[in-house]
Length: 240
Image: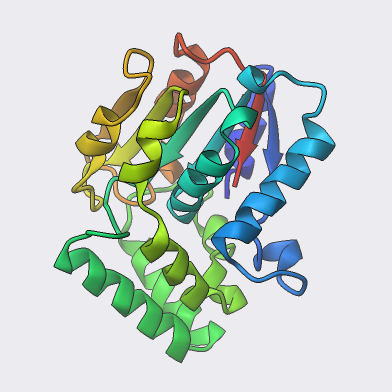
């Protein structure tokens, strides 16, 4: 989902590795989405592509599901990354989450398990049409795991991850991005738990929704924050 952003970063001298989550894209027939499978997949790619780079030069980038699974990946592979950029993960949907969040996960599991791809496409495009996002939005929507029959597994991963337990163990700066109109009951808590508080930060885009990183009103600023932040010293960007 970050291909257009990766192209823009390449023009600024950054290298991006765009990977499929287990059970998604090129991995749909060979793997099932689990948290441990995410760790294994990322570790294999790091071994193949980043073995000659210092960990401080590798940054994990994840949005929405990729951010929540990313917390788990970072917790298991602490020594492999020098920082993280997390988008659309301001709400706690794991252990101790609110009733509203639990209801949302239940609803996601319900529709992903009872709709065929045609119906799911119609529902998702209905949501997309209501969004103000306009930066390659439609093409990214078809990468969603629900189209690969991974909806239930997505929900299992989301419910299992506890950012409040993982974030305090990470000795890296974390840059959080969210849209003001998205669900975000825990973003301040996540930021406050960062061990490297001096270099970690939270940016909320007013009027942005869950697709804010696909909104041309915010894309240039977001990429500028990523490239110009004082704590960013990387030329490699790990995305999922």
